[in-house]
Image 1: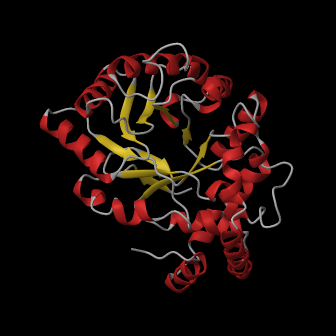
Image 2: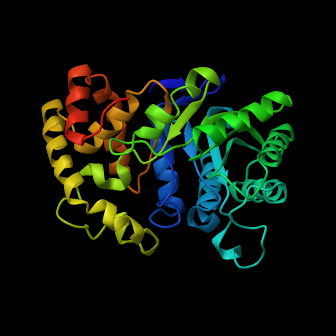
Length: 327
């Protein structure tokens, strides 16, 4: 396993990590969570990503139970969670319990997450989306206080604009507060602009790290949607129905078929090629992968070997096929 610094922080995370979005609480139970996390650990993975909203809190509960049974030394793994949407079960109960980054919500959300995860602290805590209705200074101070209280060690953002990230960093810098060190954006062959163009100055200017998600474009880059939606895929889940149009996009599926030719030449699957391509970006601290079965994880981890085979001519060919290009 390769380990990369989280931006300019001193924290090192495995280049490939394991996330719980979609899977935990939907496709993965406690037994499977233990097996998947154990397999990941055996391959050197040290970062496990979560969020309050995943499976309405059940994802955190499952991961916490798995960590307790696995009994790993706390210093050896990194856990994250995210706040913004709140818990779906509580959305109708109060105006400060959803779609907010106000101080009241954040200071209570961290306590609830730690209880579900059965941890004394999380390593990373993210503002899961920007909140236009809360003063940014209020959010930055709350995130600083969460870290100052020892309930989290680092904080960052997810799907914030470059301007929003920079504004938060400047507020923290001005008031000598803990600064955001990481952003968690979508990044894959079909979704490149934000990481490669919009954030370009932030890597050097403020040392921004990236924990990227959806390297397979929600499964599109595996090639399994070229002939419709398979019965066992995540797109069949009720809460994932919104993905179907994206996954059945005829043009993108045709491009994936062509990418499969490159993968065959390299002796890998299309999924491994897509993950390996993400790993080639030096600004990416870790690529978050998802898996509901050990076999899926075993396939994903091989992307580390494939990444070394992606020279500039192959990278250019991949970009041409995908219809996207480096900034």
